[in-house]
Amino acid sequence: MTDTLVVLTNLPDAASAHALASRLVELRLAACVNILAPCRSVYRWQGAVEDAEEVPLLIKTTDERYAALEAEIRARHPYELPEIVAVPLGRGLPAYLDWVAAETSPASSRSGQTP
Image (tube, rainbow, N blue to C red):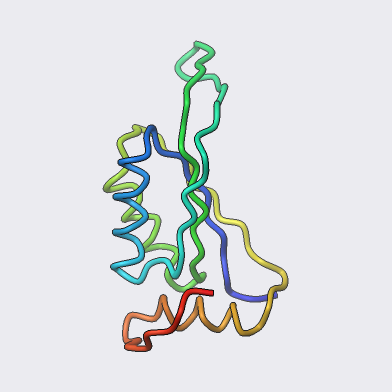
């Protein structure tokens, strides 16, 4: 088991998704954020079934940085109750996992290429 996490969240549009992704990487709360193609989400909210287009984000971070990442998402997310789900990685390419750890380290000055 590693301490690397993939965190999932959805935003209402591409502009807010890009703004959040950029901020998380700038703050070293995420090593990488994938902005995926828009999708349809169907969910129950406040007693009604809702259907909305959303832009999913896949956020790569570490367990150590998760609390700060969650706080930043909550502070900048337009939804009252954003989906924030962290999935721990059991395995991964060791060099990639090392890169995620290095790029999310607050003291890191390493400037590597994105894998």
